[in-house]
Length: 272
Image 1 (cartoon, helix red, strand yellow):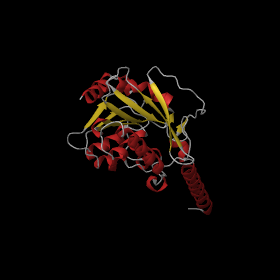
Image 2 (cartoon, one colour):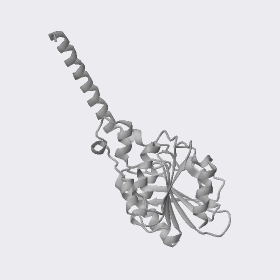
Image 3 (cartoon, one colour):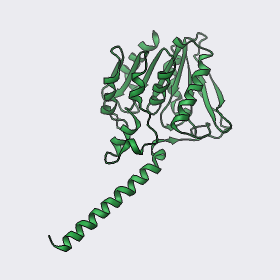
């Protein structure tokens, strides 16, 4: 090989190495930007929903306040509460339409916004998200018995929900479009980078599921382009024999609520 060819190859290697390092640094420092897509609301903003509701501010510490909306059934009978952890986009306005899935069965739905989402303010990191979830559970437990508390998670919120169900008593855990862990998902999108070392958020959902004693139900669609089905399917091996992994054929990350099977299974879970 001539010296000229060697120089060209060396330059190409240097360029590829530079690109690899540059993208890696960008992924590391911008990962919160890629992971979270919040829509903030002015603190004076007034919610408008078709369901009866109450807005609550939960002072978490001197600087952090969690904003939460409690949705109520239209009738007076209360069977329990669903603590709902939503996805990584928007705010409560985006997910409020799903509250009727539970209120029609007589459940209150408590839906928080994470810090930086909606009207919630303060710092956001994995530890704080866990602590804030526990704070909400503590409030719920003052009103309902543990066997009347259902924990529900959607997308990003599935990890927070699984954590909470692993450390607090509840009736059951239901998760929609979950991931195996954040580093695992990181590896799916950027397989040439060390996801475990680079990810600021770990949220090892698969570990939390193994610590949960109550029934677990998982919903996932085969055409999910955000959290691929194969990523969620890895969770099957950590489920208890009586747990359910419900596959929605042709379901995507955003439309499982449109499928009759989703409602049939969810209704049967909530009817018991």
